[in-house]
Image 1 (cartoon, rainbow, N blue to C red):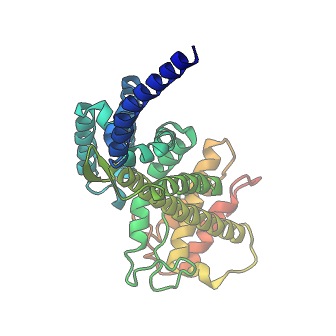
Image 2 (cartoon, one colour):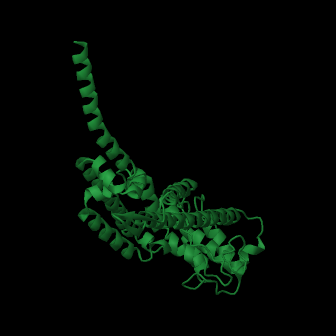
Image 3 (cartoon, rainbow, N blue to C red):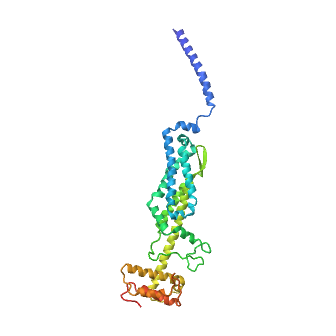
Length: 348
Protein backbone atom coordinates (compact mmCIF):
# COMPACT_ATOMS: atom_id res chain seq x y z
CA UNK A 1 0.00 0.00 0.00
CA UNK A 2 2.77 2.37 0.93
CA UNK A 3 4.66 1.48 -2.23
CA UNK A 4 1.60 2.15 -4.41
CA UNK A 5 1.08 5.54 -2.74
CA UNK A 6 4.70 6.43 -3.28
CA UNK A 7 4.43 5.47 -6.95
CA UNK A 8 1.33 7.71 -7.41
CA UNK A 9 3.02 10.69 -5.79
CA UNK A 10 6.13 10.23 -7.94
CA UNK A 11 4.07 10.07 -11.14
CA UNK A 12 2.06 13.13 -10.22
CA UNK A 13 5.21 15.13 -9.46
CA UNK A 14 6.70 14.11 -12.80
CA UNK A 15 3.64 15.26 -14.69
CA UNK A 16 3.61 18.61 -12.90
CA UNK A 17 7.23 19.19 -13.79
CA UNK A 18 6.58 18.28 -17.43
CA UNK A 19 3.82 20.97 -17.61
CA UNK A 20 5.50 23.59 -15.44
CA UNK A 21 8.87 23.79 -17.21
CA UNK A 22 7.52 24.87 -20.64
CA UNK A 23 5.15 27.37 -19.00
CA UNK A 24 7.98 28.82 -16.95
CA UNK A 25 10.10 29.20 -20.09
CA UNK A 26 7.19 30.92 -21.85
CA UNK A 27 6.77 33.26 -18.92
CA UNK A 28 10.46 34.18 -19.08
CA UNK A 29 10.13 34.94 -22.79
CA UNK A 30 7.06 37.11 -22.25
CA UNK A 31 8.82 38.84 -19.41
CA UNK A 32 11.43 40.13 -21.85
CA UNK A 33 8.75 41.80 -24.00
CA UNK A 34 7.25 45.24 -23.27
CA UNK A 35 3.89 45.05 -21.59
CA UNK A 36 0.82 45.90 -23.64
CA UNK A 37 0.26 49.61 -23.23
CA UNK A 38 0.12 52.91 -25.13
CA UNK A 39 -2.75 53.49 -27.53
CA UNK A 40 -3.52 49.80 -28.12
CA UNK A 41 -3.57 49.12 -24.39
CA UNK A 42 -5.85 52.04 -23.78
CA UNK A 43 -8.15 50.98 -26.62
CA UNK A 44 -8.67 47.66 -24.80
CA UNK A 45 -9.25 49.46 -21.49
CA UNK A 46 -11.80 51.99 -22.84
CA UNK A 47 -15.25 50.82 -23.74
CA UNK A 48 -16.92 51.93 -26.94
CA UNK A 49 -19.55 53.84 -24.95
CA UNK A 50 -16.86 55.75 -23.04
CA UNK A 51 -14.97 56.52 -26.25
CA UNK A 52 -18.09 57.83 -27.97
CA UNK A 53 -18.92 60.03 -25.00
CA UNK A 54 -15.39 61.43 -25.06
CA UNK A 55 -15.77 62.21 -28.76
CA UNK A 56 -19.11 63.95 -28.16
CA UNK A 57 -17.58 66.03 -25.35
CA UNK A 58 -14.68 67.04 -27.61
CA UNK A 59 -16.99 67.99 -30.48
CA UNK A 60 -19.13 69.98 -28.04
CA UNK A 61 -16.13 72.10 -27.04
CA UNK A 62 -15.62 73.01 -30.70
CA UNK A 63 -19.29 73.90 -31.11
CA UNK A 64 -19.31 76.05 -27.96
CA UNK A 65 -16.28 78.01 -29.14
CA UNK A 66 -17.77 78.41 -32.63
CA UNK A 67 -20.94 79.80 -31.06
CA UNK A 68 -18.90 82.17 -28.87
CA UNK A 69 -16.97 83.58 -31.84
CA UNK A 70 -20.22 84.12 -33.72
CA UNK A 71 -21.78 85.80 -30.69
CA UNK A 72 -18.87 88.23 -30.41
CA UNK A 73 -18.85 88.93 -34.14
CA UNK A 74 -22.55 89.81 -34.04
CA UNK A 75 -21.67 92.94 -32.02
CA UNK A 76 -20.31 95.76 -34.17
CA UNK A 77 -18.25 97.18 -31.32
CA UNK A 78 -16.49 93.83 -30.97
CA UNK A 79 -15.78 93.52 -34.70
CA UNK A 80 -13.92 96.85 -34.48
CA UNK A 81 -11.43 95.49 -31.94
CA UNK A 82 -7.91 94.51 -32.95
CA UNK A 83 -8.41 91.13 -31.26
CA UNK A 84 -11.08 90.15 -33.81
CA UNK A 85 -8.82 90.71 -36.80
CA UNK A 86 -8.98 87.64 -39.09
CA UNK A 87 -11.41 85.90 -36.75
CA UNK A 88 -13.10 84.41 -39.83
CA UNK A 89 -10.06 82.25 -40.56
CA UNK A 90 -9.94 81.08 -36.93
CA UNK A 91 -13.60 80.15 -37.11
CA UNK A 92 -12.99 78.28 -40.37
CA UNK A 93 -10.24 76.28 -38.66
CA UNK A 94 -12.61 75.46 -35.81
CA UNK A 95 -15.22 74.13 -38.20
CA UNK A 96 -12.64 72.15 -40.20
CA UNK A 97 -11.12 70.54 -37.11
CA UNK A 98 -14.52 69.73 -35.66
CA UNK A 99 -15.54 67.90 -38.83
CA UNK A 100 -12.28 65.95 -38.80
CA UNK A 101 -12.82 65.02 -35.14
CA UNK A 102 -16.32 63.80 -36.01
CA UNK A 103 -14.88 61.53 -38.69
CA UNK A 104 -12.03 60.18 -36.53
CA UNK A 105 -12.41 56.86 -34.71
CA UNK A 106 -13.79 57.44 -31.23
CA UNK A 107 -11.43 54.79 -29.85
CA UNK A 108 -8.41 56.53 -31.41
CA UNK A 109 -9.44 59.85 -29.87
CA UNK A 110 -10.08 58.39 -26.45
CA UNK A 111 -6.75 56.50 -26.52
CA UNK A 112 -4.72 59.66 -27.15
CA UNK A 113 -2.92 60.36 -23.85
CA UNK A 114 -2.26 64.05 -24.58
CA UNK A 115 -5.86 64.64 -25.59
CA UNK A 116 -7.02 62.82 -22.47
CA UNK A 117 -4.90 65.18 -20.40
CA UNK A 118 -6.39 68.21 -22.14
CA UNK A 119 -9.88 66.82 -21.58
CA UNK A 120 -9.60 67.93 -17.96
CA UNK A 121 -10.05 71.49 -19.18
CA UNK A 122 -13.14 70.78 -21.32
CA UNK A 123 -15.73 71.61 -18.62
CA UNK A 124 -14.00 74.91 -17.80
CA UNK A 125 -13.75 75.92 -21.46
CA UNK A 126 -17.44 75.17 -22.02
CA UNK A 127 -18.41 77.05 -18.86
CA UNK A 128 -16.51 80.19 -19.85
CA UNK A 129 -17.72 80.07 -23.46
CA UNK A 130 -21.33 79.84 -22.29
CA UNK A 131 -20.82 82.60 -19.75
CA UNK A 132 -19.59 84.98 -22.44
CA UNK A 133 -22.75 84.32 -24.47
CA UNK A 134 -25.38 84.07 -21.74
CA UNK A 135 -24.26 86.32 -18.88
CA UNK A 136 -26.84 89.13 -18.75
CA UNK A 137 -24.39 91.54 -17.13
CA UNK A 138 -21.77 91.00 -19.82
CA UNK A 139 -24.45 91.43 -22.50
CA UNK A 140 -25.33 94.78 -20.90
CA UNK A 141 -21.63 95.70 -20.93
CA UNK A 142 -21.47 95.03 -24.67
CA UNK A 143 -24.59 97.17 -25.17
CA UNK A 144 -22.99 100.04 -23.27
CA UNK A 145 -19.76 99.60 -25.19
CA UNK A 146 -21.72 100.04 -28.42
CA UNK A 147 -23.69 102.96 -26.96
CA UNK A 148 -20.55 104.86 -26.02
CA UNK A 149 -18.64 103.66 -29.10
CA UNK A 150 -15.77 102.87 -26.76
CA UNK A 151 -13.44 101.29 -29.32
CA UNK A 152 -13.46 104.24 -31.73
CA UNK A 153 -13.18 106.67 -28.82
CA UNK A 154 -10.16 104.78 -27.53
CA UNK A 155 -8.56 104.85 -30.98
CA UNK A 156 -9.19 108.60 -31.28
CA UNK A 157 -7.62 109.21 -27.88
CA UNK A 158 -4.36 107.78 -29.23
CA UNK A 159 -4.36 109.83 -32.42
CA UNK A 160 -3.23 113.16 -30.96
CA UNK A 161 0.01 114.81 -32.10
CA UNK A 162 1.90 113.21 -29.21
CA UNK A 163 0.18 109.83 -29.36
CA UNK A 164 -1.42 110.30 -25.96
CA UNK A 165 -4.45 112.17 -24.66
CA UNK A 166 -3.40 114.47 -21.82
CA UNK A 167 -6.95 114.90 -20.58
CA UNK A 168 -6.00 116.44 -17.28
CA UNK A 169 -5.64 119.98 -18.63
CA UNK A 170 -7.49 121.78 -21.42
CA UNK A 171 -4.30 123.64 -22.31
CA UNK A 172 -2.31 120.42 -22.87
CA UNK A 173 -1.01 120.23 -26.49
CA UNK A 174 -2.50 116.78 -27.02
CA UNK A 175 -5.82 117.45 -25.28
CA UNK A 176 -8.81 115.93 -27.07
CA UNK A 177 -12.12 117.22 -25.81
CA UNK A 178 -14.41 114.34 -24.80
CA UNK A 179 -17.78 114.11 -26.52
CA UNK A 180 -20.11 115.13 -23.72
CA UNK A 181 -23.78 114.22 -23.62
CA UNK A 182 -25.30 117.52 -22.52
CA UNK A 183 -28.85 116.15 -22.64
CA UNK A 184 -28.04 113.22 -20.36
CA UNK A 185 -24.76 114.15 -18.65
CA UNK A 186 -24.86 111.43 -16.01
CA UNK A 187 -25.20 108.54 -18.45
CA UNK A 188 -21.72 107.03 -18.63
CA UNK A 189 -20.10 103.71 -17.60
CA UNK A 190 -19.80 103.07 -13.90
CA UNK A 191 -17.01 101.42 -11.94
CA UNK A 192 -19.16 98.29 -11.76
CA UNK A 193 -19.36 98.16 -15.57
CA UNK A 194 -15.59 98.29 -15.83
CA UNK A 195 -15.22 95.63 -13.12
CA UNK A 196 -17.58 93.20 -14.89
CA UNK A 197 -15.74 93.52 -18.20
CA UNK A 198 -12.40 93.13 -16.42
CA UNK A 199 -13.66 90.06 -14.55
CA UNK A 200 -14.60 88.36 -17.82
CA UNK A 201 -11.20 89.26 -19.27
CA UNK A 202 -9.36 87.76 -16.28
CA UNK A 203 -11.38 84.52 -16.48
CA UNK A 204 -10.62 84.16 -20.19
CA UNK A 205 -6.92 84.89 -19.72
CA UNK A 206 -6.71 82.37 -16.89
CA UNK A 207 -8.38 79.65 -18.95
CA UNK A 208 -6.19 80.37 -22.00
CA UNK A 209 -2.96 80.38 -20.00
CA UNK A 210 -3.77 76.94 -18.59
CA UNK A 211 -3.84 75.39 -22.08
CA UNK A 212 -0.80 74.25 -24.11
CA UNK A 213 0.10 76.02 -27.35
CA UNK A 214 -0.49 72.83 -29.35
CA UNK A 215 -1.82 69.31 -28.95
CA UNK A 216 -2.10 66.11 -30.96
CA UNK A 217 -5.21 64.35 -32.17
CA UNK A 218 -4.96 60.78 -33.51
CA UNK A 219 -1.22 61.14 -33.92
CA UNK A 220 -1.25 64.55 -35.67
CA UNK A 221 0.00 67.74 -33.99
CA UNK A 222 -2.03 70.94 -34.36
CA UNK A 223 -2.00 74.47 -32.91
CA UNK A 224 -4.33 74.55 -29.95
CA UNK A 225 -7.32 76.27 -31.50
CA UNK A 226 -9.10 76.22 -28.14
CA UNK A 227 -6.41 78.46 -26.72
CA UNK A 228 -6.46 80.71 -29.79
CA UNK A 229 -10.21 81.35 -29.45
CA UNK A 230 -9.91 82.06 -25.72
CA UNK A 231 -7.05 84.48 -26.37
CA UNK A 232 -9.18 86.29 -28.96
CA UNK A 233 -12.11 86.55 -26.53
CA UNK A 234 -9.77 87.73 -23.77
CA UNK A 235 -8.36 90.40 -26.09
CA UNK A 236 -11.88 91.58 -26.89
CA UNK A 237 -12.71 91.81 -23.18
CA UNK A 238 -9.48 93.75 -22.57
CA UNK A 239 -10.30 96.29 -25.27
CA UNK A 240 -13.86 96.65 -24.01
CA UNK A 241 -12.54 97.19 -20.48
CA UNK A 242 -10.09 99.84 -21.65
CA UNK A 243 -12.76 101.54 -23.75
CA UNK A 244 -15.26 101.61 -20.89
CA UNK A 245 -12.58 103.01 -18.59
CA UNK A 246 -11.96 105.81 -21.07
CA UNK A 247 -15.69 106.49 -21.49
CA UNK A 248 -16.08 106.49 -17.71
CA UNK A 249 -13.30 109.04 -17.37
CA UNK A 250 -14.79 111.17 -20.14
CA UNK A 251 -18.25 111.07 -18.57
CA UNK A 252 -16.93 112.01 -15.14
CA UNK A 253 -14.85 114.81 -16.68
CA UNK A 254 -17.87 116.16 -18.57
CA UNK A 255 -20.05 116.08 -15.47
CA UNK A 256 -17.44 117.79 -13.30
CA UNK A 257 -16.94 120.51 -15.93
CA UNK A 258 -20.70 120.98 -16.26
CA UNK A 259 -21.09 121.35 -12.49
CA UNK A 260 -18.32 123.97 -12.48
CA UNK A 261 -19.99 125.89 -15.32
CA UNK A 262 -23.46 125.73 -13.76
CA UNK A 263 -22.08 126.88 -10.41
CA UNK A 264 -20.59 129.98 -12.05
CA UNK A 265 -23.75 130.62 -14.08
CA UNK A 266 -25.84 130.62 -10.91
CA UNK A 267 -23.75 133.34 -9.30
CA UNK A 268 -23.41 137.06 -10.03
CA UNK A 269 -20.05 137.28 -8.27
CA UNK A 270 -17.80 138.39 -11.10
CA UNK A 271 -16.17 136.13 -13.69
CA UNK A 272 -13.41 133.58 -13.96
CA UNK A 273 -10.91 134.25 -16.73
CA UNK A 274 -10.95 130.68 -17.98
CA UNK A 275 -14.66 130.98 -18.72
CA UNK A 276 -13.83 133.43 -21.49
CA UNK A 277 -11.78 130.90 -23.47
CA UNK A 278 -13.18 129.37 -26.66
CA UNK A 279 -13.51 125.94 -25.09
CA UNK A 280 -15.45 127.07 -22.02
CA UNK A 281 -17.66 129.46 -23.98
CA UNK A 282 -18.71 126.62 -26.28
CA UNK A 283 -19.21 124.33 -23.29
CA UNK A 284 -21.26 127.00 -21.51
CA UNK A 285 -23.46 127.58 -24.57
CA UNK A 286 -24.25 123.86 -24.86
CA UNK A 287 -24.84 123.56 -21.12
CA UNK A 288 -27.34 126.44 -21.09
CA UNK A 289 -29.10 125.20 -24.22
CA UNK A 290 -29.52 121.70 -22.74
CA UNK A 291 -30.62 123.06 -19.34
CA UNK A 292 -33.35 125.22 -20.88
CA UNK A 293 -34.56 122.35 -23.06
CA UNK A 294 -34.67 119.97 -20.10
CA UNK A 295 -36.50 122.49 -17.92
CA UNK A 296 -39.13 123.10 -20.61
CA UNK A 297 -39.71 119.37 -21.11
CA UNK A 298 -40.11 118.95 -17.33
CA UNK A 299 -42.64 121.82 -17.11
CA UNK A 300 -40.30 124.13 -15.22
CA UNK A 301 -40.81 127.86 -15.98
CA UNK A 302 -38.01 129.38 -18.05
CA UNK A 303 -39.48 132.88 -18.40
CA UNK A 304 -37.49 134.87 -20.96
CA UNK A 305 -34.59 132.42 -20.94
CA UNK A 306 -35.08 131.30 -24.58
CA UNK A 307 -35.03 134.95 -25.71
CA UNK A 308 -31.72 135.60 -23.89
CA UNK A 309 -30.32 132.37 -25.38
CA UNK A 310 -31.29 133.55 -28.87
CA UNK A 311 -29.37 136.77 -28.24
CA UNK A 312 -26.36 134.77 -27.08
CA UNK A 313 -26.50 132.55 -30.19
CA UNK A 314 -25.63 135.58 -32.30
CA UNK A 315 -22.08 135.37 -30.91
CA UNK A 316 -21.56 131.80 -32.21
CA UNK A 317 -21.49 130.06 -35.59
CA UNK A 318 -23.65 126.97 -36.41
CA UNK A 319 -20.91 124.78 -34.89
CA UNK A 320 -21.01 126.70 -31.60
CA UNK A 321 -17.63 128.33 -32.17
CA UNK A 322 -17.30 131.88 -30.84
CA UNK A 323 -17.26 134.48 -33.63
CA UNK A 324 -18.51 137.59 -31.81
CA UNK A 325 -16.72 140.76 -30.76
CA UNK A 326 -17.11 140.52 -26.97
CA UNK A 327 -16.66 137.28 -25.04
CA UNK A 328 -17.87 139.00 -21.89
CA UNK A 329 -21.13 140.07 -23.51
CA UNK A 330 -21.70 136.56 -24.85
CA UNK A 331 -21.13 135.08 -21.40
CA UNK A 332 -23.49 137.59 -19.75
CA UNK A 333 -26.27 136.62 -22.17
CA UNK A 334 -25.74 132.95 -21.40
CA UNK A 335 -25.70 133.54 -17.67
CA UNK A 336 -28.93 135.55 -17.82
CA UNK A 337 -30.60 132.84 -19.91
CA UNK A 338 -29.62 130.19 -17.38
CA UNK A 339 -30.79 132.23 -14.38
CA UNK A 340 -34.29 132.44 -15.90
CA UNK A 341 -34.83 128.75 -15.17
CA UNK A 342 -37.36 128.49 -12.31
CA UNK A 343 -37.08 132.22 -11.67
CA UNK A 344 -40.14 134.10 -10.32
CA UNK A 345 -39.99 136.59 -13.17
CA UNK A 346 -37.97 137.37 -16.29
CA UNK A 347 -34.30 137.98 -15.53
CA UNK A 348 -32.99 140.65 -17.92
